[in-house]
Amino acid sequence: MVNVEICIGSSCYVKGSDKVVAIVKNLISEQGWEDKVTVKGSFCIQSCQNKYGLGIKVNEQTIKGVTLSNAKEIIKDAIGNAL
Ligand code: FES
Image 1 (spheres, rainbow, N blue to C red):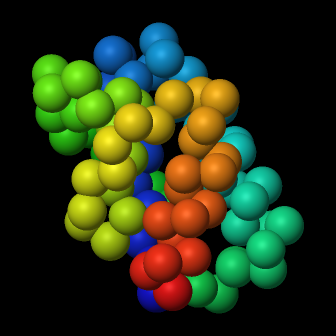
Image 2 (image 1 turned 30 degrees about the vertical axis):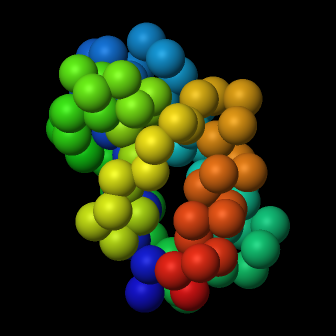
């Protein structure tokens, strides 16, 4: 099982993390990953202070450089590599 955590802290929320939750849920159904991938919200994981972009973790690994516009592609790759 691949676990995706999306930060819903205030700094990420203003960058659109609520929309990333929807993007990832759509991605999971598009790819048929319902039995393989879980998504949950998290509190701040320090990506904001470290200027990594939106706070996203895939299997405990912080994914850097995520923005609202590239979220689908980057997260799809990260999940694909973790499956
Ligand atoms: S608020 Fe999301 S990483 Fe800090």
